[in-house]
Length: 498
Image 1 (cartoon, helix red, strand yellow):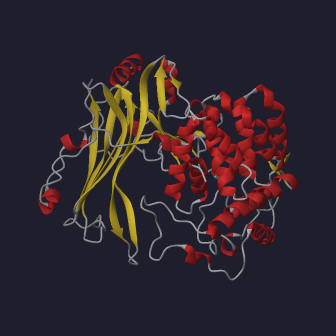
Image 2 (cartoon, helix red, strand yellow):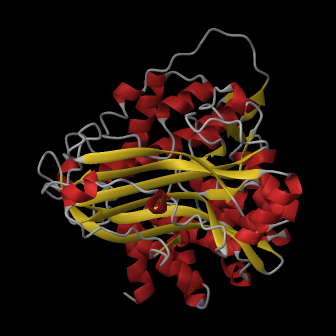
Image 3 (spheres, rainbow, N blue to C red):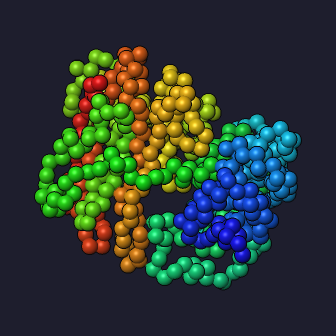
């Protein structure tokens, strides 16, 4: 077995962290080595659907880079897409062929027909009630596979008991056998791997792919309305095939928190100063964060800082500092990294989250400065500047990233960072290794923020909260309401003066 074959075997690993590392390694090798692309083509013949699916994820990421070497496996991708009974595999094959271009456009259209159900006009009917969850999803342990059975049945108005029987029949085709204790495959007292990610068993494998096969059957045999179908496709996304994990990096040098070595009791009692809270918000610095969420864990203490921003119309001097409100933001549901932010808005999946503001003084005065993808997946938080900023400066997004450019100049970028792990002993005694320090920021060049404010006659408002906590010997954090073990402070808003 050569190195590429060995790496490919980890695409089916029950330990999610191992799978992700194999994905990234094969992706990086494919940029410079044709043999890696050839191996990915061979992987498409595997009997293991995880190997096939994850190989397609890598191939899709390669196609986004415009790599011409993929032409050698076009035929295999097209054949797989036309013959598979697995919905997501067929979708990925179609997306890859779409990216490759004209020579395979007809094949992509053929696959599109296979994975598109008959669309009918909505009619007034009695409410459809599904009852699938209890019979399948709870018995299989979780709802972490790509499409929930109940949602599929609701979309196609199909009887849940029949659906469950079909799913179990598909599981038997994949190798599932009754009375086998699949949960015993999980290591004793170990529910998570060393990066805090879930450890799967073969039961997860059977369930995830059996539901995909059932969805494909529904698409080819049942009808639905256009709105229900689009809702299913969008709301049930659980992974981004463009590998957003590539965005995760080490902790930036400018993200820090001082005074961690102070005695814990003194540290918690100590006043949380604005300097601690807004230390990154320096209007004289080259880069300015529109959003920050930072978590530190040091010995027996933990610290969290969450800061948000928005634009506010002047005048601002009449607004009371005692007002409690949340900054509005663009919240985009389940969007892929390459759909942000303008495409997402055009598809009607971008909406303004302004639910926390009920004050007459703020009515129509607050405007969002950033957007965030709700229902994040693949451990990557997706942050982006407000579409108005992108349109005002005519910024372009670099594919497969959350970076935005003006020509060749980097103007805005999202940072997802991770730094170190700690041992967490769970309530039932199981060991878990979880991220100690992690966070995400949206950084924008200060000169562009300054110019945007001047052009639009706006001000930048900053607010947030800080939380200090004591950590016990089992790595459990102090109760929020216990003043002896934790200190929480809501930060009143500040208008940044540039």
